[in-house]
Image 1 (tube, helix red, strand yellow):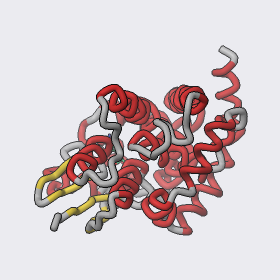
Image 2 (cartoon, rainbow, N blue to C red; image 1 turned 90 degrees about the horizontal axis):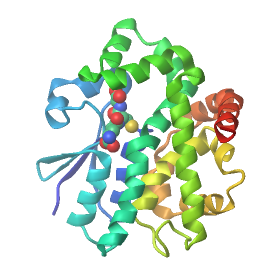
Image 3 (cartoon, rainbow, N blue to C red; image 1 turned 120 degrees about the vertical axis):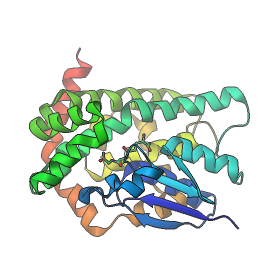
Image 4 (tube, protein in one colour; image 1 turned 180 degrees about the vertical axis):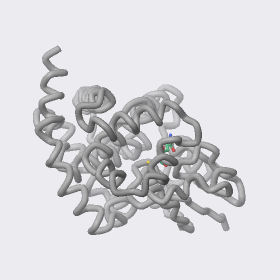
Length: 270
Ligand SMILES: N[C@@H](CCC(=O)N[C@@H](CS)C(=O)NCC(=O)O)C(=O)O
């Protein structure tokens, strides 16, 4: 009997990837909430498990595993049924290319768009001391610069343009990939490629922004219809979002929609 503890925070995209994987594997786990808005991620005891001061962290039989992409692969290797990675090395590299899309662009992208739409407002009402602590980010100047820029400039921050471009690259590639096969990214079965991407499409969808990128991409829309109806997506992500979180996304996303669409149009015209 495995002992699995997941340190997570409700509407965090990285935690959602891990939860979908856990559900698909039929595993049960103990959830420990780390409230990012109370800066609990910087508690010294938590930093011993995850020195980056971020969620998620999986602790399996006492061993901490960090980085959501690595956690999902760890889960697949440790609990092989049902398999979520192709067996052949070439298939695995295709799958990992999607992990790279997420880790090298979409993750920052979802953070910037969520930040400029809603967390920015929440941070304004935070006590100044907590806000400064959050900006310090356990001494990671890259994250500090991003947070500060989006906090100050919203959608006009250059980091939001990077976000819009990252989503554009990913969805363009997804449309082309699905044209060669489908209905899932690597063929007839869902894999970690799909799971990695789901929370990032879901975030845009719930903010009311997804069709800004997918309006002219029918295959991506079909993929999203399939993914968002998949039982493990519903149990690991959608059903765990509270009504308050849904309401926050629904009410704030549309406020940045026109500006986001204008910046995407600008980018496509370059
Ligand atoms: N590359 C990491 C990123 C983890 C990450 O940054 N998580 C966010 C939530 S989605 C977080 O904990 N943010 C806290 C903060 O930035 O203060 C992973 O995939 O696990």
